[in-house]
Length: 437
Image (cartoon, rainbow, N blue to C red; front, side, top):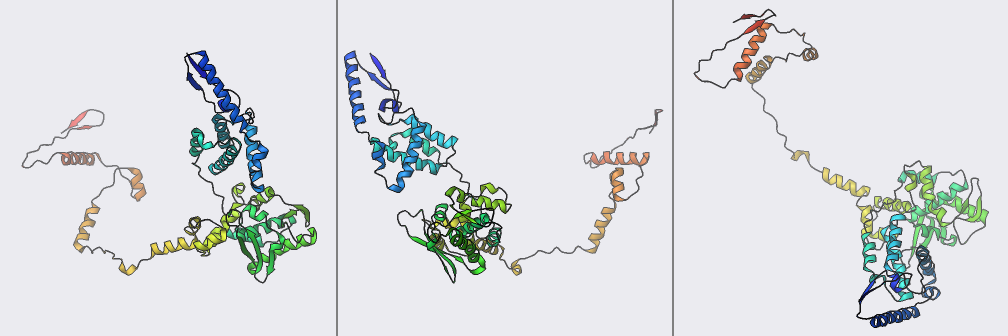
């Protein structure tokens, strides 16, 4: 006899949505097989680790990220009982299709989710997502992103905004964020994590110390200057003085909520509000597609300005905290010095080395012959062409038409040497049918 064992629910059998085809000769063997499957399920249930114990294995900083992604996944596949067995391949496939097709997540984000869920599966069930080949192939198939890079501010427009007098504390905060983010090439989290005690005024301007957020293995401190030259430090000082005097803050958070008036509120600005600052600035500047400007626009504008100023790849790599110098080439290869250098190389040739062929002057008799030939050309019998040429149009006479027709007929005949050719002309005049030869 034959038997197909399939599962429902959220255990191993149903979770992986696999049907097990078993060929057994008797009901006794079938019962023995089912008992073995039940024993395996009990063993797997005994090895399931509660979520709370799994999260204890992560660092405090990573725990929030893992718990958020795991909770989101559990809510999406709420029909699965996670404490009786792991979710199956079909559940993961639906989830990642949802993230990609509905939420429009980039492939890099999908791999982050994959990594987090894989870590949870290994700790909770002692199982790796790599053992689900269709899921891995699905996520790899999404590696076709065409990344829409954040637009770059026009440097002159952005600097004009950073040096302008702001009419309210609302715009004063946004001006200060723009100044610091541009001169520091900051990511949004790096800007958000700045603290007042690490912003020091000196003769050069403001010296600001911070840590790059993507340098996980080597958390080195980075330093940049908001220069006094040009007036940028003075504009930043207007905001920082308000923080000292109106919020009474000298340490800790840098960014506080502005109002449509002149005073600051004693309420810190959240990350989401800071992230909208470039959009607000682009809207104020009247830039097209202002909604496309993100916080990364500050960083890209800063890198573009650095490349235009002649900063080397090594200097850019160290300043912006990139892992390798290849990131610099995007900006250096399209910088103003690079494009001008290419133009100069392409346009650099000596006119003395260029030979110009001069046409020989035609003899006078040849020019005269050409003039004689041109004088014999007759315009087509088109009144409009005569009018355009400024020549009074006179329709040709009948005899002229006959002569032209005979000449055309003769010239169209094959060349006949020593041949006696007789041409007969038949002319029908007016409407009376008289014929002349």
